Length: 292
Image (tube, rainbow, N blue to C red):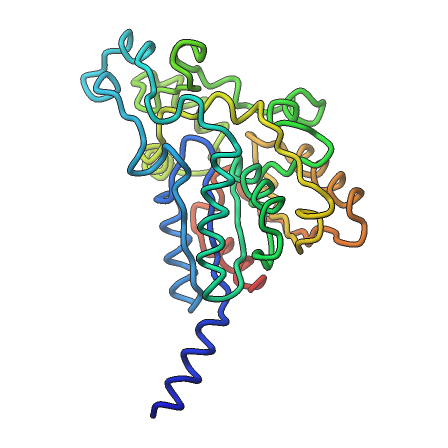
């Protein structure tokens, strides 16, 4: 009995763990359906809250109902103002080191979380079994996330159509009112993030969004280094219906990464999904399970 238990424990410890990193205005909760789908198929998965997100997120009283829009536009963000991409990477690298004690780590980043996992790859390449970009930013020759949107391939993004709130120079953050009662706001947000979702499914997703994101993240150097990040096996999950990170931009990032490390090219998969991913997480979970 003891020897059998020991063998089972050893096998479990060698199982890979999917470590999931969210994008802007999000948190670990956004991965709950995906984690459930992976776990039900016998996989290990853990989502991390980036600094200033999740239980640390800032929800000013003026953001609650009834909203005080004037106060909301000027309220400072005590937790996210000044948070850098390096802060995100350092936090996730610490989690990677701990998870790696239990077995291989498959580090997954969605959207702006791709910039974080790239920087983590620069820091702890030997602790990561695979990097997975889920319709995410992967900068190698492009310096910043902001630079991505200045390229011809990035200009089709619908993100600028979503109205922002306040002055980042004053609040220290990029701020959105995801609880806006303006029906036009909901139409624009849905087109950018989840055009093929039902209205009910999109409202449920939107309810988990956080109003603030650090203003510095889109300007920080997000590039992967060929000698560190570049030696980690990597996969890219293209979302072909994405209107936030246009497909042409996804393909350019894949192409530039492959050209930088021709001996270690992306393993590419495509899903007919918008930026938030499939409304049913099963197809995404199936692709990730195949990587394990």
